[in-house]
Image 1 (cartoon, one colour):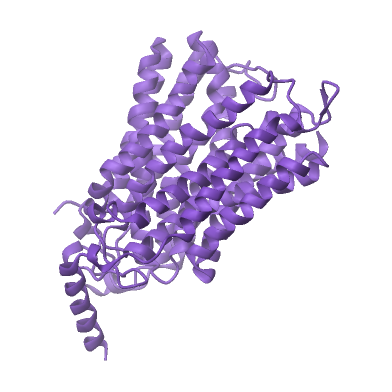
Image 2 (cartoon, each protein chain N blue to C red):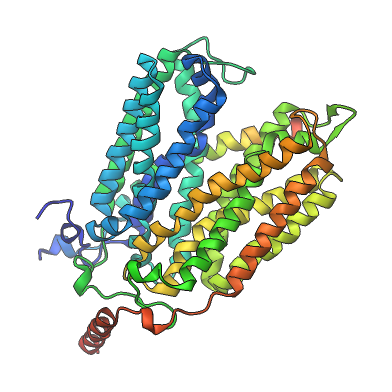
Length: 464
Length: 42
């Protein structure tokens, strides 16, 4: 038996479940770097002497690979256990940086696509889902709290990576001053920064892999005691994707993410455009950067606070809030956002906290609907909604804004068509959420269900 | 199973594990707060 096997990482009695969230955070804080990729954009454009669009593809490939690998490798992650998955994620994520570094050093953009985009993207997908199912099994009483802590780390990872990357680039290229507008680091500094980040993240993720354990009795899925969904459901991933509940939740996540990305993608220019009068904005570029920081904080805090709240108020009601209240806030932003910067920032911050909350609460929603039997694999398949929204959100917003005016000359009213479109998107998600009912028992794995009932009865008998 | 394997996890180990992830997260949060403050001063 390898030390990586699920059977080898069964916790001994007395092993604290409070070691599992830091193990998960070590992975999510590392892979959350992907949302800070924009700090390299200007330097990469200069280094490869190419367009912003060509560099933008690196991020897009990584996010698409995240969705695809989470969907196709979800069952492997579930069966292999969290340690093997975290190791695979660490190796892919680290290798992605190293290959990307080689691409930068040799001026080969395709190597950056292959490294950071494809290999790193696979690491993102495996890493994102690797601790989720384990956390739910350790915290069956508080799944929202548990997954909220880990997925908060994904938001927090960008907060760390952005200043860390700027610091590394200025160490390797003393002429690089991150705060200067249009500053670019040399290709050599970029390559060394990528290499350093690859080493740091691999080491950090390996600590998570070393710490993680599965709860006692979960070394073998076929003999483990699973927590059923709210109506006793234990559903396999292959059956889950044939239920209307899965696809309704897919629509819910897609709509919530699409609407959030609508603001996140445009945050900095948007606040300046909302307060532009006679061609001049009352909001400076520095203040607009501060607005992006506020949104990052709201995104991270929302992941933890709202997901934890869902343990008390229920999953469906909290999505009614994300989508229903979110819809009203979007409407207020479109109609009254330009009244004052305070109103604008407050509305946008709450909307983005709902965006983060939607990500963090979805594994617990899946657990309620399908049980813990293969919840990690089902979660992986659901993340294709994220990849699709990552394409749809910016397409909708940029497509509409391109038609109404030139960047740098837009005003608040120009945003109304895009914002009203997002209100419609949220309304679709709101209705989809209301339509979600408990899963029919025709989709249950009856053999697993019967065996589970027997194990529960035996345990209860033994503890009586 | 030996006694040591069944003993409760040391609180020191739990604290170290949380410090390992808490310190970088606190650094990121602080840096972001500094950046966000520009919204009110910039």
